[in-house]
Image (cartoon, rainbow, N blue to C red; front, top):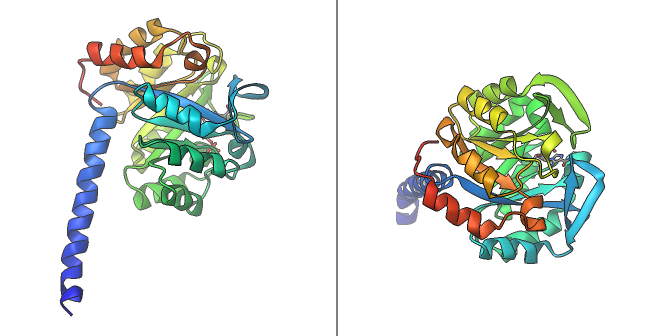
Length: 281
Ligand code: AMZ
């Protein structure tokens, strides 16, 4: 009896606690320092890097994703970006075992994308401890689903916009639409996503420097944080990205640079903490 009476109060305090916790997490994620986010791209259970998203241009960096994740955590990463590449092409997750192994290996928050097209898949990922969900293709094919996901999983949904010359690409980047990245980003912001990851496909895996201008322009058109992705090569790129921090560029994803050694993750994180004094989005 007493249990029944106390339950509503307990559940109210629990929900308040979760909201506060999410707010703190959100603040730490996007408000304090520009985040340098290491990426693990999974292909057939292995950690790979592609060039411009082409599956036949895959370099295998490790066949133990858990060990790789632990390595980036030990270097000071505060968030890990994981892409299920087979999932992105197939439209359903294909590397769940590897994702579970990554989750079991590290304590830092993890964001996962690739093949997430329905609520049940989000529920599965959340139930195994994934903190952030990245939706790509679904944002174009089923925008209402993104809205539903944001309502069901507030503070967890990010949209990944992968663009070729400003136009959005989907389905493992095999298909380029006629939709302008900025238009999709604004629509997704209205649906309630917490951030946009903007990838310039031509630069991804090419170590050619990120598309600072396009990322800045996108961030200026939005009020939510934008995370830059694709092309990072050296510390100079991190320095350059910090100059557009005030526009709302709140993080950067790096893959090939940290695997090839042209960027030292630990040094990059320390550099940002020393030089980023902009507390905005
Ligand atoms: O490299 C690729 N070909 C590729 C890639 N990295 N294709 C998709 N993706 C990533 C996107 C986003 O994080 O950058 O997969 C996610 C989106 O997947 P989906 O299945 O929702 O479109």
